[in-house]
Image (cartoon, rainbow, N blue to C red; front, side, top):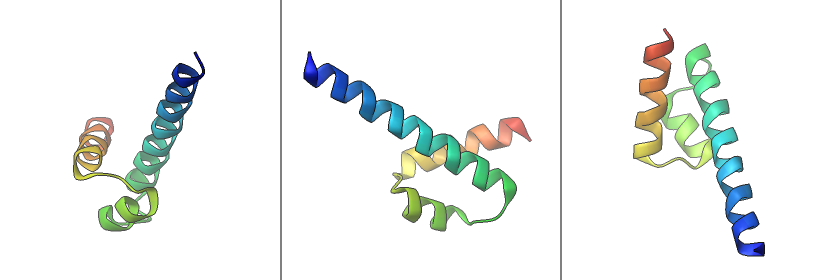
Length: 57
């Protein structure tokens, strides 16, 4: 049970990082490379963020 809770918390933290990165990317204050390094995102995650931002624009 404890492991399940840890996994849920880990997923929630990841979602928060992705949301913050998307907001910053949308604002244009940082480059994709800077965001990827700062938030420790994979290329796949960064691609998903770019798609999300493009849809919102």
